[in-house]
Structures are given as C-alpha cells and as structure tokens.
Length: 372
Ligand SMILES: Cc1ncc(COP(=O)(O)O)c(C=O)c1O
Image 1: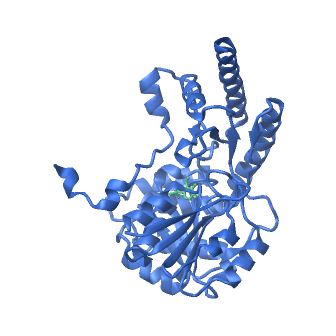
Image 2: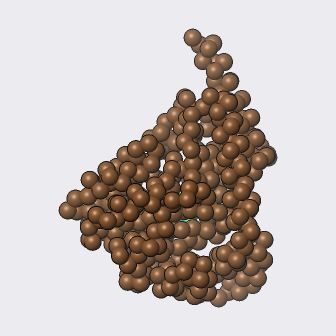
Image 3: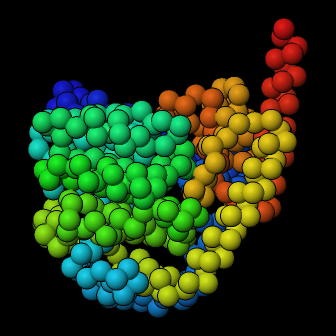
C-alpha cells in the first residue's frame, strides 16, 4: 500500500482544483462555443511583441535556458527601479511561493494567512512542514490587525495576497504602513501582488519601499495582465540576501527560455497592458450594472475578477453554466458556498456570462417555485 509510505502532510492536503480547461469541456460536453472566465487570465491574449519574441526563441530550445534570467532581470530592474540582485524569477509566481516556504520554514513554524486567500499558500506551507494559521477576512479584505494579533512565538511567515484572491479587495498604504511598523524582525511578510496592474485605488502601497527595512518579499506575475499564464513565469522582489538564499532552493533552469523572451518583450509593450487595463475597467462597470439589475450582491473588486453571491448553491450554478459553455469558478473550495468567481472577459464574453447567469438563475427560480 503506497498510501502508508506517503508523508503525513501530503495525506492531509486537499488537491488544488484549477479552473476547468476549455479543451476538457469540449471533450466532455461536445460544445464548441466555450468561454473560460475561471482563472483570471487576460482575455486579450498575449502582446503581439511577446508572440514575435516567442517565435524567435523557439528555434534555440535545444539549449538550456539562461538559469540566471540575466536579460529579464535587467529589463525588470529598469522598470521597477530595483537592482537585478533584488529579483528572483520563477516558474509562475506559484514557484516563488514554494521557494519562500522551502527556504524559510522549519518544521511546525507558523504561517499566517487570510481565510479565504490563495489556496496554494496553505498547500505550500504544509508541504514544507509548516503550520497554517488562518485569519478570517473582515469585509472581504485582509484584516491586518487580526493578523498582527495572531503573531506568536512560532510565527515565521505571513502571506498576504493584496488584492485578495478570491474577493478582489485590497488593503491600502496607511494600513500596510501601520502593520509593518510594529512587525517583529524575525518574521517575513510576503505581499503577493499578482493583480497589481489592475488596481485603480491611488493609495495602493508601493511595498518595494520597505525592502531592506523589513523582511519583505513581493510577488508579481506575467500570468494576469501580461497574458502569459501558459508560459508559467513570475517574479519576486526581495533583499539581495533573501534572493541569494532562495536561489539555493531553486532548480538551476526553473524558467524556460521561451517564457523569458516573451516576458522581456511583454514588458516593453506598455500599450498592451494599458488596453488590458481599460478592457477590465470597462467590463467591470458593465458587470456591476448587470449584477445590480439582477439584484445580486457582489464584492467591488480591485482585480480582473468579481466574487458574486449567487444566492444559492454556487456549485449548482457553476455546473448549470458549464453545461451552457460558460466556465466560471465555484467558490466552495474557499468555503464560500453561495459564491461564484467570474473573471472579466471581452465584452462579448461578459454579455454571454450575464445572459447565461440569468438563464440559470431563472430556471432555478422556476424549479424552486414549482417544488414549494
Ligand atoms: C493571488 C495569486 N497569487 C499567485 C497566483 C499564481 O500565479 P502564477 O500563474 O504566476 O503562478 C495566482 C493565480 O491565480 C493568484 O491569484
């Protein structure tokens, strides 16, 4: 029995369920016209410049990639105004979460995170023998006071997705400043800013300022606004020392050469990011208006997704929508049983989402009226 040989921590982990891929639904239901609004991807696709760079990079994949990601770090360093030595590149920012837990966590040390927050925090912490400490959100956003009150003698890490996934709400500069002021020096705080390009509030914290003053690691990704999810590339910004230690825990060739080339080209295409931002901002307004007119409650979002209270079992709504070719995310795994999370799409996709949601909810209304 192989089960008896598995580490305790792995036995306890509930596997992460990603958004359903379009191809899988095509195979299962034989529907061709499918929209995926489930994984917070960029509906515009990658930048044209990135596509050209990828084509060019393909011809040299017989060689190992540059394990140090030299050119990408140079490009990021100019963009972010940090030294290349403050940067670590990962196979998605997901890998950097793992590098953080692998590098810094010792057995039974505590990792504080919001509940709900990105599910991988809990999984990565447990894989590394850490103990997750879950702190409920207040008003759908990270409660930094409660997080500070949860710090104990065994706390090593605090993981904060800002904005939060799945709610889309963020914490502002004043809150972060107050929180960090009182942060003990033996604790590392990770600010996961996967959706930072979409944040419109002006007081969103510039967390780079705290590097060196506090043990801060910032995570960013090319998977969201840059539209490169399929390549798996993200990065961390941290003190040089922290980067050096994380590099010890990293595979030598963790980021492939096509991804590196695409990321560099994408950084140069500011127009693509601006267009993506605009699309999301317009789509958000469209969806808010429609959700309002349907009388549904939702959380105002600083990201490219919206958490919607469907007013009934989200799993059922998710499955009904799936049958009609619209993939959203049921939030059951996040213990939000009545909520779905929808990624803002193109205007055509947003319209299809609204139409399908209306159909599904009225159908349910009719069947529940009948059964009364
Ligand atoms: C908050 C947050 N962090 C990290 C990630 C992972 O991104 P990546 O594709 O860079 O691994 C996601 C993806 O959904 C996310 O929502």
